[in-house]
Structures are given as C-alpha cells and as structure tokens.
Image 1 (tube, one colour):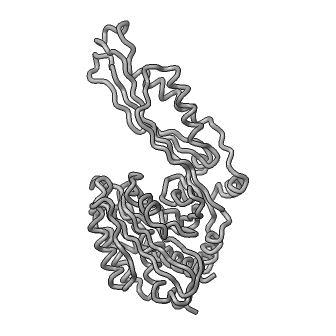
Image 2: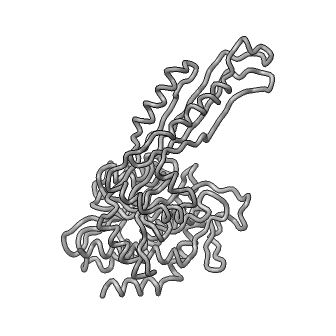
Image 3: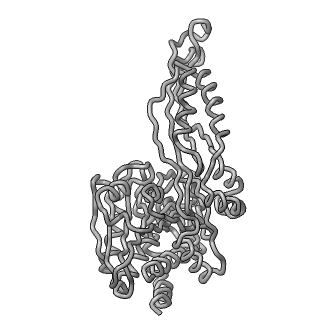
Length: 411
C-alpha cells in the first residue's frame, strides 16, 4: 500500500521535480575546475524543505559532498544511493541553446550534465527524500552520497567518504549514472592511463644522421601499443555467461560496436605533443594513452606489456600512470531482480544486466566486495553538444530508484 502511494505521490509532484532538475542543471558545476558549491546549495534547499537529515562534508572547500542517512523502523540492511554533482565542462559551440540553461522543449530538457549525471543524482535525492517520511515502515538504513570530484577521478568525493564515514559502505549501492532504461550495469571496464616521454638529442632537420627523431619513435611506440588490444580476457564464469546473452542489448544501449569494445581491450591515444619547427628533428615527444580493460584482464597484464616496450626502447620513459581495475558484482543479484520487477511494472519489459564502457563511482564499492548497480537515463549527448534527457525517461528512473529502494528496505 505504501509503495503504491509512493508512486502516486511522485507522479503528483512531477512538475516540482522537473523544476528542481532544471534548477540543478542551471547551477553550474563543471570539472575542471570542480567548484560545486552552487549546485550543493540547490540540493541543500531541497532537503531542508523536505526535512530530510544530511550533513555537508567538504575536505576540499570548493568540492563539498552531501551525506545523508537515516535509520528505519526496524533493523535491516543499509542501502547507499550514490550520484555525483560535478559535470563535464561545456563550450557553446554546437549547442542549440545555452548549455547551462536547463531549458525544456517538447518534453526534453537540455543542459550540460543533464544525463551525466544530474538526472541520476536527482533520482537519488528524490528516493531519499520520499522514503524519509515513511521510514517507520521500512527496515535498515538509507544513506545518500551526493558527491563532488568524480569526473576527474579525484580524491575528495566518494573515495574520501568511503575512507572516513563508515556508514557510506553499506550492503548494496544504487547509482543513477546514464545507462539507458533498458539495461542495468553490474560491471564496468577498467582503465590504465599511461604518459610516455620520448627524448633524443634532436638536430637540424637536414642532419638526420645526428639524432633519432622523438616523434618517429613515438609513432613506433603507438604502433607497438596497439598490440595490447590482442590480450584475450578470461572473465569469471557468471560474467562470461551474461556477456554471451547481451550483445544486442549492449549495442542498443551504448551504440553499434559497443559489445566488441566491452569484451576487448581498447586503446585510445588521447594526446600527442612533439616538435618545434618543420625543419628541426624533434628532441622530445609525449604520448598519453588510455587503455580500457574488460572484465577478465588485469592491470598487471598491461603494465607487464608496457615494461616490455620500455626495455627495448631506452629513449622512452613512463612518467605517470593512473590505474582503475575493471569491476563487477553479481549480475543476478537481488537489486537486479528488484529493478527488473519495477521496470516491468512501469514499462512492461525487463532491463538486461550489461557491462559499462565508462567508469563510475560504483566501481569503488565493488572493489571492497559491496554490490553496486547502475540504472539511469540514456546517455544522449553525453560529453557533447545538446546533452539532453527525455522527461518521461527522467521520471521513469526517479520512480524506479524510489520503488527499488523501498523494496530493498522492505525485505
């Protein structure tokens, strides 16, 4: 009975929730620089109006986090709702509207961060606020983590909360990163970022006998790095079984070709800097590479491969690395079943569990063996111009999060 009332209340408040979503988008929070204070003020006003408990945790002044938690009427498990407040930067080129406008046209809301991930963070906020008044009828604890410093893998958001606030660990995590309503993300690829520097003496462009070219060596390096994509993954049996069944769902949610990318090592050469003048042999060249790891490939395999290249090329040094292993949890876990049941009730289909290409904070809980699942809107325009969300999808995700949190805390 409470669950049905919950659904009716959310639908009744549709206009108010959409208005908040628009206001949240207008509160600029690009990272870099990562200043989320205006957006946090919007969140605080909403929670204050609802009387929901929270505190602001700001180990870095311009990157505050909102941490809320409350106990329910009976003992039980702790469900953590997680979303981030910072978004990609935006430039006006290509946009049909102001990227920070939160404008609504024909049932669609536009703005930087609308998909990644202010829609999902709204779902976390709303689920937390709507369940607080009926907490006496639930079991366990509900915890909200609306964090900053996510877009650059920084230390001041979720990593800080997990280290310093035990309540944020929980027993299960529900995250609203863009995923497409037809899928649930139970796993994601890892990443290894590599920064190479090639150094040679350099020389006049006519004196090629005097020095090797740093840029030519860099080109050879890139060619060698491409071989990393030949590493074959060996995923756990339960992951391999799911992967064998979700090629169509993966491509539908993440674009044609996504399934191949999900199941293989990929390489992106993101940055190349080299040379000063056309008639000079470059003495330095830097290359930044982004290697993405499917479930079943370890970061150590990539590091071993790179060491083999460096052993053969003394002109190359590896100056910095950032490593995030792939992560996964049970693709048939309790929260997957709960979400599928609610989506089937709301829309008549069951979302498929798939692996995500991009990284999310959900991985941080999976690293410590806490199941973490992602269910959100479609990634329309994410990181590009005219980023947008269909409002019917937004409301669907809000309802799914609130109802799924209710179900988890009712068992």
